[in-house]
Image (cartoon, rainbow, N blue to C red; front, side, top):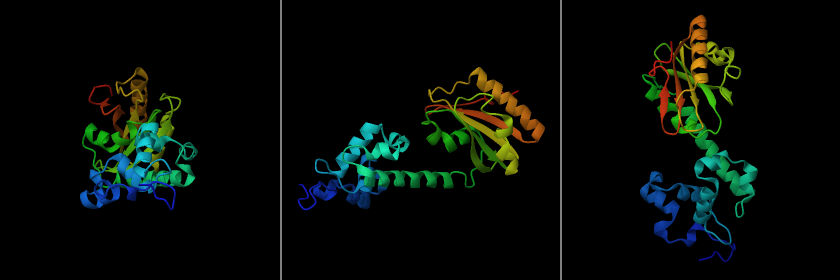
Length: 233
């Protein structure tokens, strides 16, 4: 039923058993789909759609939550039935999620294997549309001190100069570092350039007294450790 006073559809027009907010209270937030969670953020729909239908359309149009995260505020606001207010609500909610992830991911995390590195960064880096080189800074006990972005773009020696790669490691007195970058193609197989850069970083680390423990390449749900492949001399 349409909200006659407001001239638009709302979640209250849905049967109680399928309203996202009621379902969240009853079954918990993890039981809700992406569309249902987004509908709660939107709160209301428009003259032609409920908030849930609008949420489903947005996810389809942008290719899921990752696409919504990547789009600009203006792109989102221009979508029919959204507008600036709803666009701001969506972007604010996503930024809260990002900040929560950034704040909590390095707390008391100890790296014991390449799998630990992948677990730390896979969920974010697997979807990046450009190559990002990051440095995982470690203490003497291999506890994560910080994760910093070194460069963004095509990964090569000129964009990933050892001076920049070790800048934060030196500033934060890291004992060791693990470098991580993604392959937007989804295939984490190391290229000759990846191997060459890794050797340069290992050599630079020796001069600085900061051990390079590994270089991990993130793909689409998979990863490669150059150390495990025997590609770090």
